[in-house]
Length: 283
Image 1: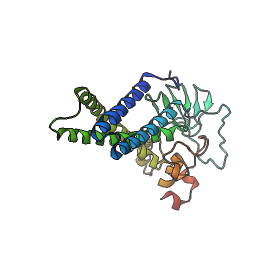
Image 2: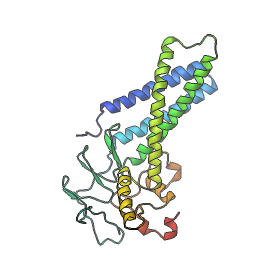
Image 3: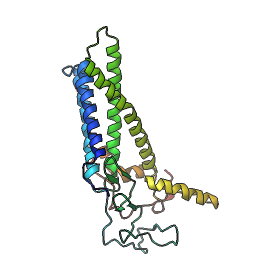
Image 4: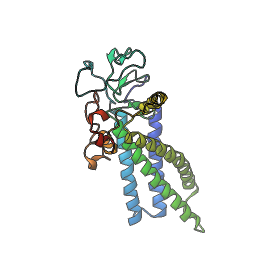
């Protein structure tokens, strides 16, 4: 069973890796190549420090923030005018009810076998944060990945630049221990940047369609079933690109990259394409 908020081995590995890459980037690569007292060196150090702090800060919030719990008093209202869609079971057509938690499931809610409870708008369970990614912490998780990718790319550029600069010198300034540290740092950076970039690209794809990872896999089957009978499937929560972005990153575009706003609403109800005029949903 996952204990949310506990520092597990994967979390320790993440924080240790960040600390190692920060030290090697700032105090080895930048300091030896440009010097921390030069304008270029200090500027790069400040930018990289900012990116690292934003990534670590959002990561910690994603670790400790509850992804979203179903209120014990929740009861779906099938006659509610503001909620025209009610998710039902694949078999039987009944409203979704969690036998393990003994309550009805709001739309887009799923039971996590690791956390042993239902999570609002659950995307997936992430072992690297020892927590589910859900309604309440999805935005900070995305921002963490975004800043992580930018920081890794910045660090890789500095590593490559320092390597080329060092190779052009007849007598390299780097000591053997510093070279070893930089080699290890470079070996960590490449797969880490690749993995985070793939994850970020995947999540951006999902955000633009207002889907979760679970809904994507469910949608593949739903699309196949609809096409089998000659119908066209459309994800019901796809409101158009801008509205999809707003529903995840918040209504204030200037705060999209800051952990100051989250999903609109309580996570118990979500607007659907059926709520909007046709001209709006086609954007």
